[in-house]
Amino acid sequence: MDVHRGEQRSSPKLEQSSSKVDDQLRAIAYSMDTLIPGLYIWLGAIKFRIGGSLPEENYPGTIHSPMGIALVLPGYRIYSTYQGSYDP
Image 1 (cartoon, helix red, strand yellow):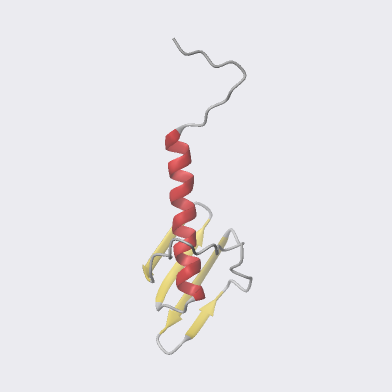
Image 2 (image 1 turned 180 degrees about the vertical axis):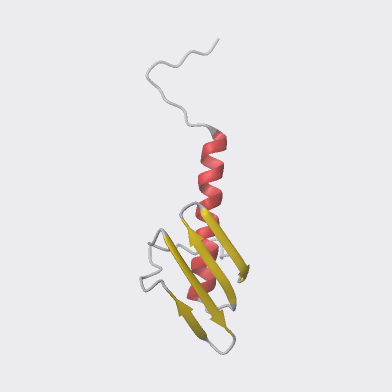
């Protein structure tokens, strides 16, 4: 029997779900940063992306805003409520 005292373990489901949300936000950040056409919406835990691309494995960027919307059109036109940096 394995007993751990004073050691807290986080639930694997919780880690996976928060990691998945971070991956979704990274995908939005990457797509906006590289100007890949699409519609991107993030509202707290809700992330919605039409178009865009998955981020490269080593892409460290993220969005530092809890909510926003962006539209990236072909020809490098971007309309976004987000005006911050994509740096971590």
